[in-house]
Image (cartoon, rainbow, N blue to C red):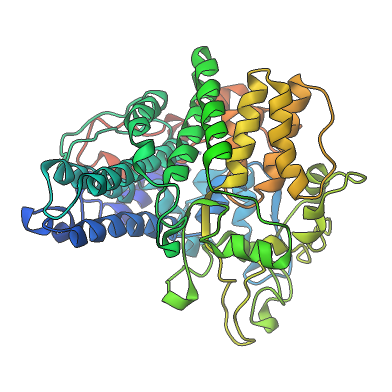
Length: 509
């Protein structure tokens, strides 16, 4: 195993230090991010905002990122024998046993997945640095911006900065934190709870400076709104509640209050589970979207072929061409799916979102991601879906979870049943306490299937150590040593010797 670790480090140093990470926290392109001559108008601000979103999406478009980081690492997903590139698809099984050094090793059948790139945080810091510089320039003053516009843009840039830190915390644990423009000092990594507490403090004052909705419907969900900020604040609170146990009541209380505000004041709604209704949600820009990276074939958006989650779980006629998509690449094991949708409990999602749900083969199909098929029989393309990050149903269930943790069971059940009722599912009528908390966890698994939340929910609630909830659970030593993180690229140390790599992956056994 020491040889495997040494090989991994060597591969990473060669692969990553020869590319864009030659300088720690380097920001590119310079003409968009530096120079007083670029911040002279509202158009310049809009260009920088668009660049932030674009850079972040480029990072999660490098591979099957949503699936790999948020869905597969607890062991429920398997490659379908007979599927295209079966040997390479088996990487999902190494993800499922948390064998991350094998996942990112060079010379494997799945090299083209580029999972080694997930270990490199450089692009995320370019997003953060872009936000820092833009905020600084906005605070200095930009001609033609009203006070309202200035506050709105600062709020949007602050959202993207905090969202990026939140995303990195879930991947790497402790991260380097800074908010100064043109930052170049080699800082050490800061404890993740501290980072998120700073992000909470940073973001709270800006919540009401973004609108619930933009006048232009094309921006719905695709640009940060007040609902986006509320969703992020809720998620950061719930993450910290799992690790900062002495203050968990405070985190739960803020999450509950934010959820109440969102439900009572926000313009969001749950669409009916009909073909038109659900296709609208998955296409994006819907009243159910709190934040997404909107993608459309109409804009010739360059999505990596395997980056959408549904790519691995769709077959013809939901995925083309027919001749090489007769079966899905992967499937979720039947014992897990039977836990999600128990026999005898009504739930429209079981039939509406899946074909052959218990097949244990490539006949398994996540139709949830297959309602926006646009390709002809000769095009090898995935359905034209958005990349959903925060959805209204997600926030409602976080609200229910926080209320249950506060022993406000009646309110928690009311929020939970908003989701159950939309799914035409048997309403929850059980007791409070742990039974309710566990049911809400499973409801998040059901409702948010494939949206990149399950693994992080397992980690923050510590259910990742319980075989009832995870097919391949961690032990407490692995959890405490943060086996749930991704390895961090040694390239992070090239110009910053204060960086300490993720210890678990350097002493893996």
